Length: 168
Image (tube, rainbow, N blue to C red):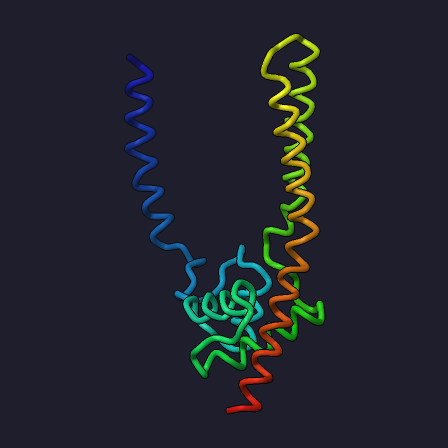
């Protein structure tokens, strides 16, 4: 019964204290400003061109995913500059590259689990071995292939921007 009174006291004191603390948080940032966990591309686009959240995502989508210039004329210069920065290597690839090593590590752990299952005599160990091998191969390919793919699309967007500026 005493634990119930302790829980009530913690809630009675903790809830108003948390509300007071969160209500006066000086770390709130304006909408559209990249947060502390934003990747270098978002920070660069905001720092160079003061683009909002939606415009940054449009530029990123056009250059990194589709490989061409955005349809809006106001976003073409930021897209050209972003493509040039990525092609030259001055701007890092998106955040997933930091975690790309996790896929092969997960695959090796699954592979080891499968080998241990086979040694123990379990029937499902062979499936873990196959799954681990696939994860290692796919993860390694992603880590090596995707950065090249991003640079290729950025080069294509850069060429698309030069063609559009010459014709327009």
